Image (tube, rainbow, N blue to C red):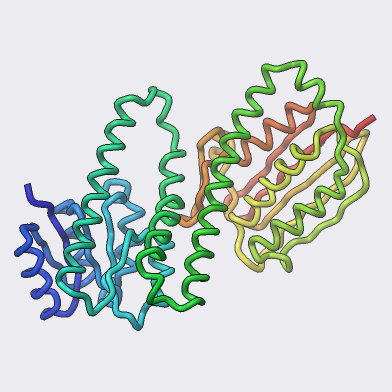
Length: 363
């Protein structure tokens, strides 16, 4: 059966010419003259591939792509931008949003058909691999980690392929920009995989008393760690002016890497779920033989019901652009409790969140 293509293009002559070319290559082609009409057709006809212009009335190509990737029913549909060379500077935005490829105007018939066939072949390969994995995967594989890994992986592979095929026509600054997107996606993968591994590491420690006893004997310089995390995370989010800090000296009875991970997770969430310009606080003190660390923000907050439901792979966000597995908060709480500490969370929807930890000081 011929593959179904959807062509979204506002220029009537271009749209009809491309439709004729694609149909002559035995593809079934549906067309739309603007982004909103195109998205409605995607929902209805479920195409195997979407070819979409960027600059269009009603809803532009970026808008179509955003709505597509947000709809789980059709999110995996391959998406290829059709764009003029003059708009190459905007391509990084499209690739970061999840576009699979782009074809530069003007293009030859051979180039168009080659890229379309290549994307359809890749789609078939992905479907076959997915089918194989699902047939052999255990029942517990229903966690959302695969869904979260998909987008940064697509960025890495898609932009990598883009550079390999188009580097000869790119300027140095454009290559650097695309490489920076690969680096950003790599950091996302690092965070996702790291938090998943940390979850199982903490779980293993819960059942390994000798190793846990050995780790509890280690000490960490809390002030040094908090200063380092504060500088790195505020720089990462561009929130240096928003962060208020105050630290006291104190050796905590927890290994440095664990304290670092706990505070980094909490500060990361505080920045993610609050607006630029709003205040985030990281404060430490000492009370009755324990190190007290407080992280607070003026962000979206959570309802009491959401707080009660906090658990592995459970996320609450009003921001559709926030990514992650929801493990940072869970890992932090479990780690603090594992090292005989207390962990409390207070949050109000639309007001913010305050987290306070009490960790034993080293004797």
